[in-house]
Length: 200
Image 1 (cartoon, helix red, strand yellow):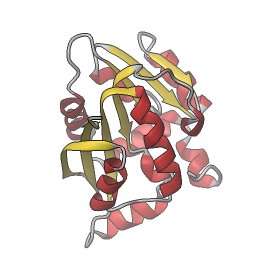
Image 2 (cartoon, helix red, strand yellow):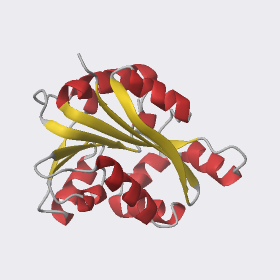
Image 3 (cartoon, helix red, strand yellow):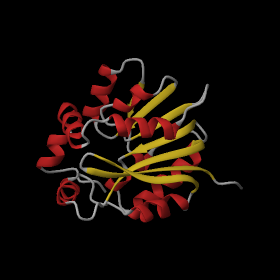
Image 4 (cartoon, helix red, strand yellow):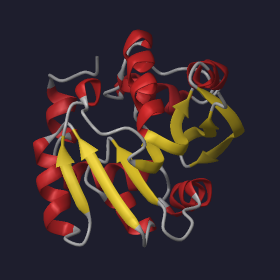
């Protein structure tokens, strides 16, 4: 499970701190936001569920039907106030009770590295029933040869940083990969994985 105690958790559970620090470390968020929006590629009439929506910033990327779910009451309350036109609710992703095929697209941005392999299996299996069409993952990757990246990943509240290949393996158990690549933004190497529902 994700790290839920200690100084770093308490600090980054404050939405303003989280947003500010991430912007600095990514050298701005424009590149990451652009990659996410292009990968999600919402069509007219489609809706999206943002799992681990945090302070709700990603809701700005989507004009259509958006919902964000997060475990942190602080984040949910902040997002509801800052983005009143969007839907946010509190929930534990390991126990989500959402009707099957409720969302066309499910987005997990910088999320699964907070969970063990067994928990990720449980999450993706559950989401495979919720997503009508596809899921999108954005995740940090190990960046060999970059001491700053190594330090930041050690400090990250997520205790399960996976390689790009490991991330794809997790997803392929429940979905069919459509596109997967990595890119660099500031002090981070990030992956973005697009996968669709498996054909029966």
